[in-house]
Image 1 (cartoon, rainbow, N blue to C red):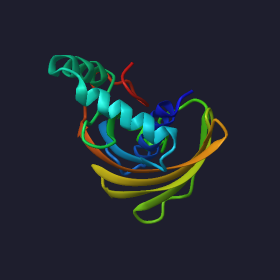
Image 2: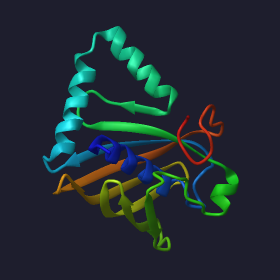
Image 3: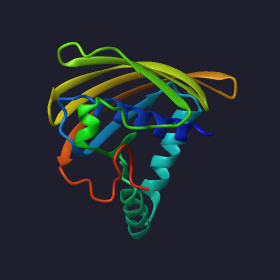
Length: 182
């Protein structure tokens, strides 16, 4: 698995932690993130992906962006920013259920204290672990900070992510509960 998949996985995991609290509105959420890596292969691959998207002819770039949008994903061209859409049902909110992110990752959360909740993540492919904190701004928005370390080809890389979630609509459209559009 390459480091782009790790970044996408971290983005999904971050999205899944944030939409699970009871005071959050059920429905369609957009989670946008900015990932910063310590200059290892992940940073190089992400920069290359951004450059390739920016260098595409306008019609090809639009086609690529439209294809990703149908899957609930958008990637910016100015910096390492991406967004995913996730869907949470009312029942998921009532059970305080966390939407699924990557299958090879486990997580734990601390009890919510005021408007914050801390969590930890451990993944097997690639081997990585990290910690983060969600700050709930209100029933329609939150912010997240995540710090992870991953081992890729024997090298340890640090990855930091700042994310923000915002509620978009009560109707999730093509996006199935608990994750991104398929």
